[in-house]
Length: 170
Image (tube, rainbow, N blue to C red):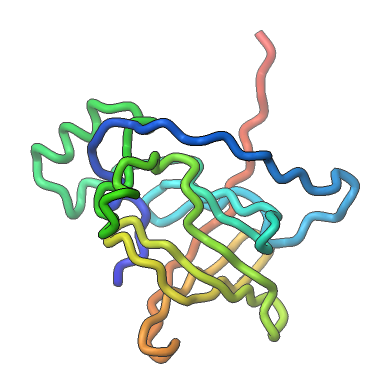
């Protein structure tokens, strides 16, 4: 299982999404170290926030990597806005039209060990969900580990924290 977020974002039309009540955490609470924007090796970004299920990681920026795509797929992907990418590699045909941008890829809970968050990882490259965990390696570095065979075989990738760019007034 490759844990890169990018080539799983393929081409199709964008479908409508039903409205849900947004989860709004207490604005006075102290943020957990896992919360924030994280950049993958392929330069896509995942935003991890508090949610009703623990911590949720959503795809907040899509960068299409060249690797794994044919010339035609890569050219077509670059010609489309990221809002048009859908989950077309999902094995469930009813989910293939859902937008990738904003899609929840991580569901995490604090683990039994410090700096470890256990949970599930959705891999858009193959449309499967894996057990796994995220380990805080430092304040600005995490390691995502997706696992198979009852967590015996795991593969990981390090992500770095992305500090939001300051808005410059014109």
